[in-house]
Image (cartoon, rainbow, N blue to C red; front, top):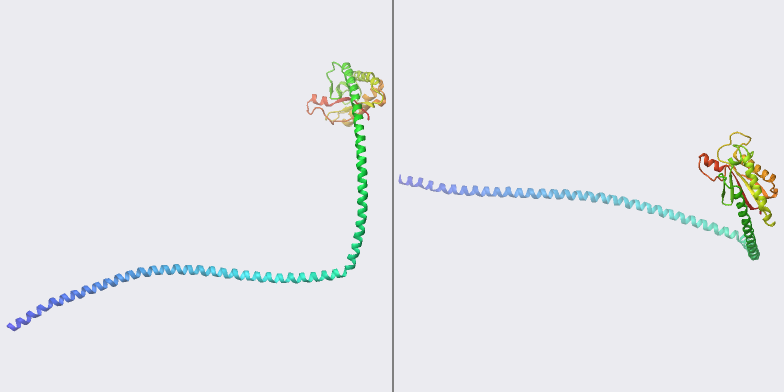
Length: 318
């Protein structure tokens, strides 16, 4: 009994050792599993980063492949262009060689013609030299004539200026006498070197027949001319110019088709009356200007009346 009890006691003493060994083995196993799990996790992270890097590298490789393909295409195109240019240059060189060959042959055929042309050019040069000498002589003569003409023109201008100055003296006297004779007339005035009569003073509307008052006005002008004429030296070729002017309004009725005819007819009526009053025929002229040269640009009746006028000017007939 004692031996049996001893044997049972030994078996129970061994079990805690097994339990400790199994616990240790379990802990080691768990530790190993944990290490494997952590290692797998780290490996998964590393593999994920590697995959991204590989994808990026693959994209860059694809881009480089595209660029390489484009460069190859450009290189091929440039090679084609170089080949075309080379063939074109060869063709041009061949054409140039053929033109030069033909020109050499042409020059060889025309040597005699060129020699003849050289002779003709030499003859023409001699003729040109002769013409140049003749032109130089003519230019020298023209220069001398120009000096003479200039001197003559100067003398004529001086003579004309003296004549104008003398005539101006008598014109002033004529205007002075005429101003006295026509004093108080509102429709008669002096404009520069002209006596201006508004035609309404001399003529009815659209008529070249002088009115009674107009006839008296012209008689005063004739008297002033007759008074001044004997004082003017005979060598002064003077005339009394009678100018007829009209307004821009169309002629309404009468025998005159337009203002030009009417203005000319009025100027002639005045001329004939001056001659009838004693003015010499060779000392009076008449001109009709129509509506040209208005002295007033307005459209009012007063402006139109100013443009319907007779002007007297004592001037030179030369």
